[in-house]
Amino acid sequence: MYNVSVSPHVRDKSSTTKIMLDVCIALLPTLAFGVWHFGINALVIIIASVLSCVASEIVFELIVKKPITVFDLSAVVTGLIIALNMPPTVAWWVPVIGGVFAIIVIKMLFGGIGQNIMNPALGARCFLLISFASRMTDFAVDGVSSATPLAGLKAGESVNLLDMFLGLHNGCIGEVSCAAILLGFVYLLVRKVISIRIPAIYIASAMLFIFLLNLPSGIPSSNYMLGQLLTGGLMAGAVFMATDYTTSPITKGGQIIFGILLGFLTAVFRVLGSSAEGVSYAIIISNLCVPLIEKITIPNAFGMKKKEQV
Figure 1 (tube, rainbow, N blue to C red):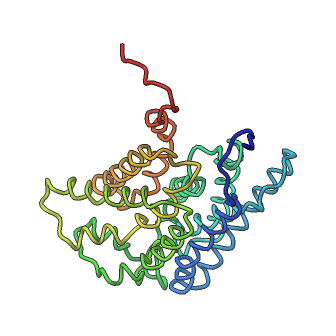
Figure 2: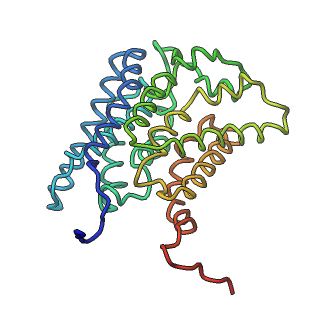
């Protein structure tokens, strides 16, 4: 006797809320380190960012008379990732504007969770970089402005790799400590929230293309290459942003192409661009390519033959 029912036939206990809760937990080490390292203003930025995202979603859904969806925690995750990308001394209202833009313009106007065409938090960060460039690139510590290690690498300076790994340097709140990011990465892998495919291919291809693009000026040093890996948003972007379910491919082949595209664009922006960083722009541009990537990598249905080329 067989129990026949309509699809889907494969079920598990996962839900949007559980997945988003796991992402929140994975983000805690890097954000907690940011608060410890940079001080109370970093905590203010995190709280302001999360509250603005949650409030924006509630207000929008009340206005358009849609069910309230903030309990799925996706707005909280967006707020945490926006805060992760903020300079520690930025004014509290900057992430608030970013949160409103991320939720209303990038997420809700496209239909809500699962319908947005790019990562809302990174779209908001790029919007803020364009709108408030001086504030978003000011990494002053104790009133003294200094370049980030990534900017130092671009200028030909060397960096302390141990400090880069631990996070004992200036930069965005949630991007400075690779050790803390790796803790979140391991947690997400153990919980099977993400696979290693996109982060590994992204990081490997980024390092390869950075190496190749530097060859015309000479073989880059090991300090330069490891510094590119350990500084800036590469690790955080690969773990927390490039793996976003909605804006990354679902096919294995698509994920490989996606990771390589991410690595190539990041290398181009970092090596050839005027700015030292390029992760945010690389990810949102690649997000826009996902429908095409999935179209060319979708497998044939069982029993179907590929159309012959004329």
